[in-house]
Picture (cartoon, rainbow, N blue to C red):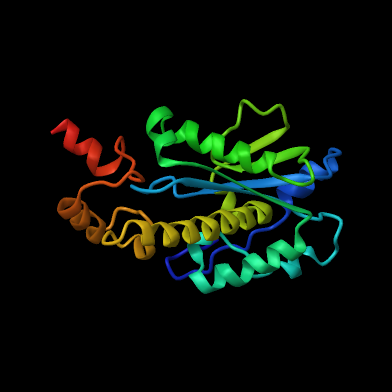
Length: 218
C-alpha cells in the first residue's frame, strides 16, 4: 500500500465509531470537538452534535463535512446550515479567556465541551471526543486522536465550534480594534504579535499563554 503524500486526498469522515456505539445500544451519540484551544486571545469554543444514525442517507446528506481546518470559511458557513438541518441536536459551549487563565487551557476546554454536551436539546447517551477525555461526565465515551478527521459527528462538531468562535472573534474585533482579531481570530500570527507590542494586551488576551508566558520567563 502506497503511503499518503501531501497531495493525497484526506479520508472522508465516516460513521464507523458511531455505528459501533449504536450496536451496543446507544441511540444518541454526540460527537464533540473544540475550536480556539491554541489561540492567544478569546474564548475556547466546543460543539456537540448528535446525528440521526438511523437515517439511511446520512453520509450522503453530510458528504461535504470535514474537519473544519480543511475547509474555507464560506464552506464552513454553508455546511453549518446543512448540519443544523440534519442533526437531531446541536450544542455549543465555551470558556472565556479569564477562565482559561485561572484553571488552564485543558480544564477550560473540558468545561467548554461539557457545556456543549449539556446544551443538547436531546441528551447524549454516549460520546465521541476529539483527543480529550471527559472524566467528569458519567457517559460511555471514546476519546480518539484526530477524531475530527475520521468521525462524521466529530467533524460536524468541529464546524459548529469553529463557525461560532469565528463569529465571536469578528464581534470582539469591533470592541478591540487594531489587533486584527477578525482576520487571525486570536491566533499567534506576526500581525497579532506586532499589535501586542504596540498596543499591549486586552482583557480578552490569555495572559498565561503564548507570548505573555514567554515574556514572564525572560
